[in-house]
Length: 76
Image 1 (cartoon, rainbow, N blue to C red):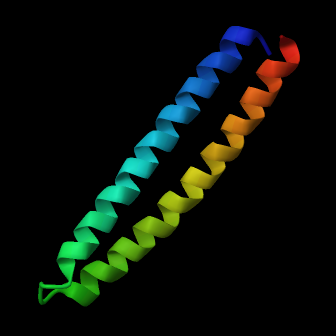
Image 2: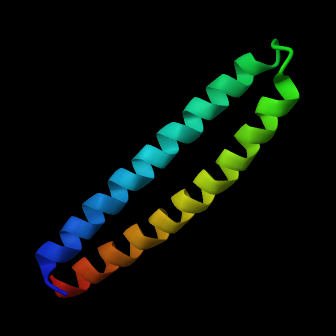
């Protein structure tokens, strides 16, 4: 793979990871405020499912970033 293509994929992966982390932080902030509302149980379950998915995405993107960085350092 060409160096530019690897860099492009690395940047896309970093952006996706950053977005997933921001969503995780946002959900955690909302969860903190949620305990005062009567619909707590229903929204807590939705947040848990979304957090599980976002954690998998973040883990996968972190793995890809390590892979792309390793490939780029091999080429230098």
